[in-house]
Length: 70
Image 1: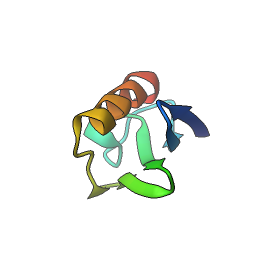
Image 2 (image 1 turned 180 degrees about the vertical axis):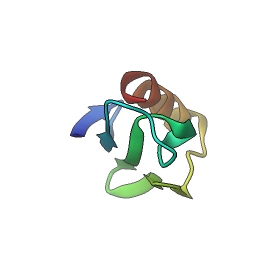
Image 3 (image 1 turned 60 degrees about the vertical axis):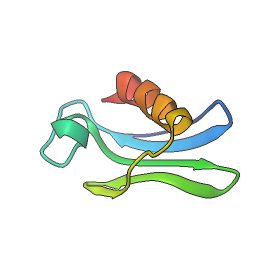
Image 4 (image 1 turned 90 degrees about the vertical axis):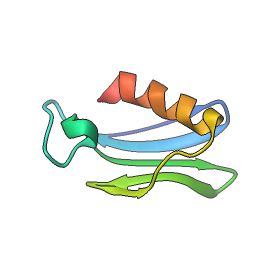
């Protein structure tokens, strides 16, 4: 299942499942995640990390998404 949304001006797209997987973040339910702000890619996970969250603001958004979908 795909979900899209916006948190604090950051747009996100997440693919999540009912059960965790070895491909998920921390073996959880999220297998794909993208967070963008003003069109700039800030976070990308596609069954593995391509771009991890760096600054505190992006990490806060990432944590909200993890609580909601992982």
